[in-house]
Amino acid sequence: MIGPMATTGKAGSRDPLAPYRGRVGSNLRDRLTWALQLAQRPAETITPGDLENLRYEMAAALEAGGHKTESVESPRIPDAEEAQAIHARLKDFFEKLLEEEEIPLDGSLRKQVYKLNRGSGKWERWELGTPNSVDALLEQLIPPYGHLIRECEAPRALGKGERCGVWFVAKRDWQTFCSARCNNRAGAQAFREKKKEKEQKNRRRQKRRRSATSRPSSSRGARRPAASRPPSDLPGRPLPTAAGPARKRRDSSRKVASSYGPRPDSTAPN
Ligand SMILES: [Zn+2]
Image (cartoon, rainbow, N blue to C red; front, side, top):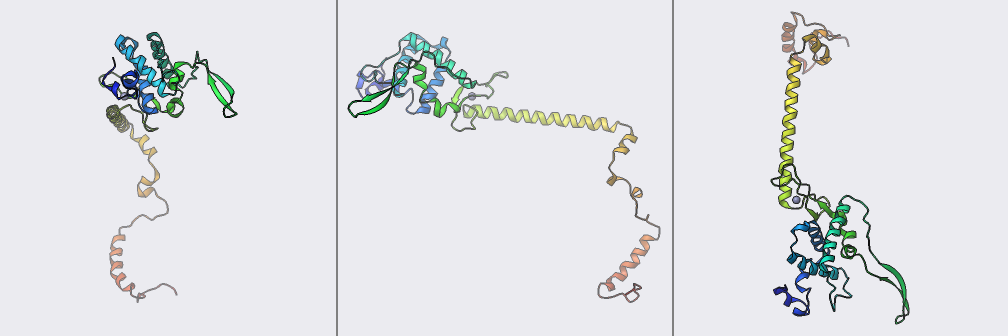
């Protein structure tokens, strides 16, 4: 079961967790991604061989979380039954988190005490007892990254209205899809929906226009705004006479002179 990576461990091939540390990730975000992926694995797809690997991965993750007091010398590796229970409880935990429900930590036997360190002569705060394994796995991960856990809402590649549904840790607060592929698929769908909506809007508008032209003319006239009424309706302006255009032509010939000084035949009072 111990692969070629075993020799890269600090304690050589005698360190059973060495091949598994890389799998659970070297930073908090990667470790949370590991936990999310594990939680989403259907129990029926986990073979006895997978379960054997999972036991060691869980131990490596617990160790990375600082729960290694026992595991440095002799790693405390969960047995198969415990590993299955952790798997089920992780799923339950993330389901509640995504529903924004309160998440109780059942079976956590932690006890906080103050103890006098006789060497330094100072009081120290200690945590005794055994934490719930899920609590121990997630205590460092949820406060900084819990709000970035998302369920991918992108449409599934060949699903009919189904969603991708993968749980992931968003890299940015606005990231809503698990991968570039899901992002593209969701973008294409949004474009299609927008186009469809536009077409429906156009169809409705055309229908309205058709029904408006078939309405009786009297009702149309009443709704027309004042500005578009014929000029004869407007008050205060004299109607154009037959002589109007002819006089205007004569006036324009005199206008050239008037722009340079008073008109010689001006009758305007001074
Ligand atoms: Zn996705």
